[in-house]
Image (cartoon, rainbow, N blue to C red; front, side):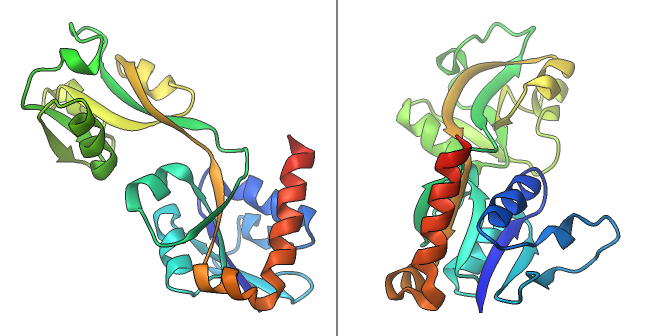
Length: 214
């Protein structure tokens, strides 16, 4: 049976809608009363796992799911050993550097050497500032990273931005974009190569559904 890892949160509704378009119905996950973390589709030909977004590539990499849907931001940060298949064209956001609007910083290069940058995307932040040849201290935060500059613990943050409303409401502004992120379809590499459970047919249908929706 085909197993698909689906992300909790912002990407879930569109992920379920896309899978419905190719005949896989996991809409039971949208029922506010359900606490199930694993459900079969209505035809009994596949099942889905509902997991944290950061865990989607883990389940796929270790083979507990043959397919997964996850944001490119997670793939960039985690660098999992999975097959990257399709840009699904939803969940648009960007990874940005942001600072206090009241500060004098208007570019990452304005930040002081060995200054602090708070982020839950530690690897992406470190890689970016290394590419600028600007030594900074990356402070790992996993809650509201906006508090870093607000409290003075950090000069800047690296975080995922969608509308920018949270930044504005907390007196922060974007000064650089690392990359754009969208939802991606990924697969377990061996299952993909061996076409386990006729995986290629499902993937082809998903590609077609994405093209139709664009």
